[in-house]
Figure 1 (tube, rainbow, N blue to C red):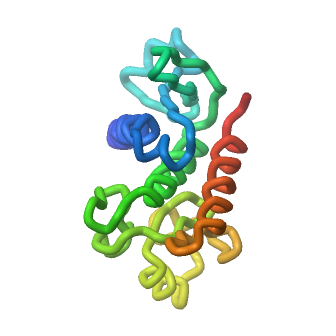
Figure 2: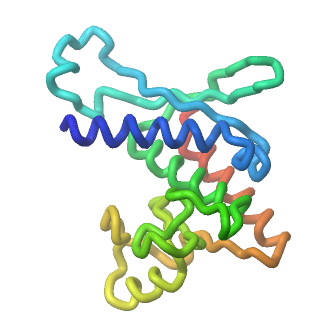
Amino acid sequence: MGNTHEKLIKQLEATNKQSSSEKFYNVSGIRLNFAFVSSKPNNILKKIVWDPSDYFVQISSINPDQNLESLIGTTSIDRFIRISNIISHLISFSTTTTDLDEESLCSICLENPADTILGCGHPFCSKDLQSWASKNQECPLCRQVFEEQKSFVRIDDFNGEVCDEVKICKELIFSLIDF
């Protein structure tokens, strides 16, 4: 369990860095902050056994101009992971191939920019995903069955489609939040 806890803490830190970045703000128009909160704060065993079901993620919007943070809502750990992956995907819209970071790369080859995100939120380059999909209809990372129509594809040359995809991604993020 400790390994899962450490991975989630690292993912939370990385997501906070991304969701408060200028790149994310330029694409989405929002800045977000995430924090793990225990649903059982008096549980003394939480330091010994970490159970993800005992936690939820609190989500706040950030207004750096006014140095203000406002609570938006909460979400489950599973939904937070999906939100985190969607945020990485949204950041890829403002990333050129020369300034790619690890989160913007395909999760299979770790070389090409991730231009497709599955419904589960995991990003891949279309070449590797097509190759994988010809043999298997499950996400290579989480094994969730995927459907082509529920994946998002980055389209660089068509501003209208990019705007539509950004809108869809933002709607998906907010649909995963309990207000």
